[in-house]
Length: 492
Image (cartoon, rainbow, N blue to C red; front, side, top):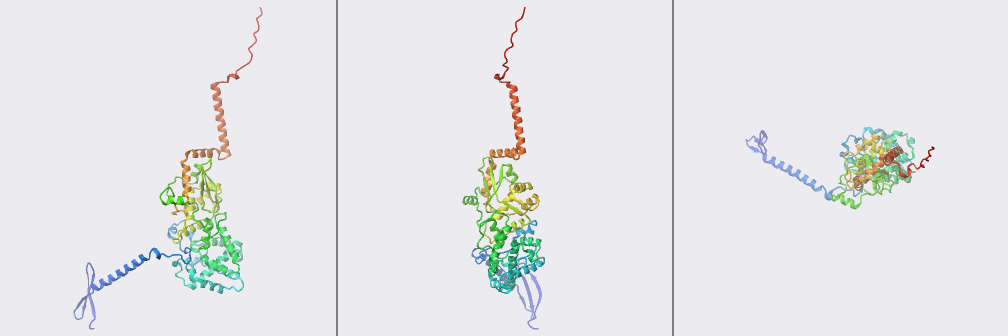
C-alpha cells in the first residue's frame, strides 16, 4: 500500500485549479503547475494549427484544376438552395447519376433501368467487347476521373466502388441519349414520362458525369461516331434557342457545360466593349448607373419596340436608335419556355456560381436582364407578340412568376448589357421622340385606332372650315352676278 495516493480535496482559485494530494506518509503535493503546463501546451498546439491553416489559405496553396483544367463537379451552393421556390430545381426527379445522390432510396427503381441501358451499350459496342473489359479500362483511369469531382462528394467511395458507379452511369447515359435522339425508348421499355424527366435530370449540376468519362467510353465502342452525333443532336434538342451556334469547347466539363456553350458560345459577354468595361470598373457610367425603366410595358410606352434577334447566342442583346419614327429597337434572341426551362437555367446559374469556375456570368446576367423586363403577364404577352418568347409552359402569368422566382437574389455581371441599358435610358431622356412614338402608338397601332383618328381629324377639319365660312362669308367673286332686272316703262 506504500506510495498510494488519495485525493482528499480540490481547491478552486481564480486563476487555476489546484489538486492537493496527500500520501500515506502525510506529505502533500500540488499539481496546479502541471495542469497549467498541459493547458498551455494545448493552447500552443491549437494556435499552431490555426496559423498553419491561415498559411495554407490563398496564394499558391489554393486548389486548382491543373490536372483536369475544368471546374469540379460539386454540390449547388447554399445561396441558391435556401430559396424554397427554386430548391426543387436542383434535385433529380427520377434518376441519380454520379456520387452526390447515389444510393438514395427514391432513385432505386432507376438503378434497374441504368443496368438495362448499360447492358445494351456493352452489347452494341462491338464484337469482343464485354462488360468486364470495358469496366477494366475505366478502373485503370479512376484516379484521374476522381479528380473531376469535389473531394467532399467522393471521399466515402473507394476506387473500385467509384469506378463501377461511373462505368454503369456512363454507359447508361450514352445509351439513353442515343435512344432519345432515335426515339427508341420503347425498345428499352422506358415510358414517356420517365424519359422526359430522365432527360431533365441529365442537366442538373449535382447529376453531372465527367465528359472525359463519356469520351473514354465512346472510344471503346465501335459506334463512336454515332454516339458523338447523338450528343450533338441531344444538346440541340434541349437548347432554348433555335439558332445554330459556334463549335463547342474542346474540353467541356460535362453535359451541362456543353449546353451552356451551345446557348452563349465560347466567348464570354461578347457585347461588352473594352471601353465600356473600363468605364464600369472605374466607376463611370458603366454597369453601376441607375436606370428608370422597369418592364416591357414601360419600354413600349416610351416608344421602344421589341425586335427578334438573329444572332447565334441567346445572351446577345442589342439596342438600335437609328429609327426616325421610334426612339429605338431592343433586339432579343428567341427563347422557348416550358417545364424544363426553370431547372436548366437555374442549374446553369449554379454552375456559373461554382467557386472554381472563372466566367463572366453570362446566363446569370441574361436571366436578370430578362427578369427586369418581366413584371406582369402583359409583359410576357408583348414578348410573345414580338416572337421573342414562345410560351409552352401555360399562362403568361406562370411565365412571369417563373422568371421572378429564378432571378431572386441573383447577382449579374454589372458590365453585361451596360451599353444597352445606357442607350435605353438615353431614349427615355429624349422627350420629343418619346412623345411622337406615344402618339403613333395611341393612334396608329391598329386599323381601328387609325380609322378613329382619321374620322376625328376630318370632323375637326370640317368644323374649322364651317366656322371660317361663317365668319368671313362667301368670297367676293362668288357673290350673285345675275344681271339687273329690266326696267319696264310705265304706260300713260
